[in-house]
Image (tube, rainbow, N blue to C red):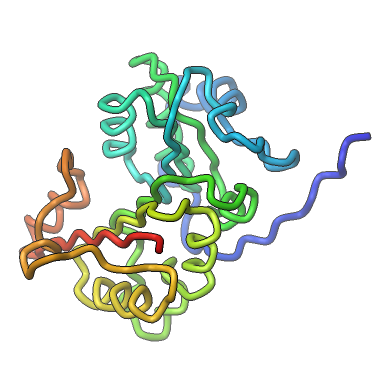
Length: 232
């Protein structure tokens, strides 16, 4: 008997889910391609996550809030032996990515279009090699800091699903959020910062493609920080 569909409260997503009207092709992609690539959280996750992908993969990497999808597409193309799970609730961003996946024939991406905490709670323990959280909404007003995705609760989730020795990579151009993340990871027993010298956190990750968020930050005179934490 099929398990009844569970109601899932949105715990960590705030803000708009849709922007300007979609083009006809984008709307069609949401109706035809997304259902094929979307994770089915109404059924248990496979014990071996590579089973989720249509092509053979050896590693699994999760990107939370992929925005325009530039980074996700770049990483998936450069590393076909890694299976990527991309989570993005914003409809326009998802529609844009779907078109690129179809055009490029990329087979090592699965998707989810709602709250990333739902995916984190669905995934098996110690199943991910890496989590990327890149230029998340900084919620700059102090009264909104509780909405930031980096939190004790979500770091607990990260710690559960990351393999020992796996990585959590964070990038932001907002100093207060960088400091916030450093403090939260410092205070969490399961993570250690991998920086070895003062310049490490200002150096982009290996193979890093410039994203539109990074370009905007530079135009506006802000520097970006790139933090890598290891799951102990």
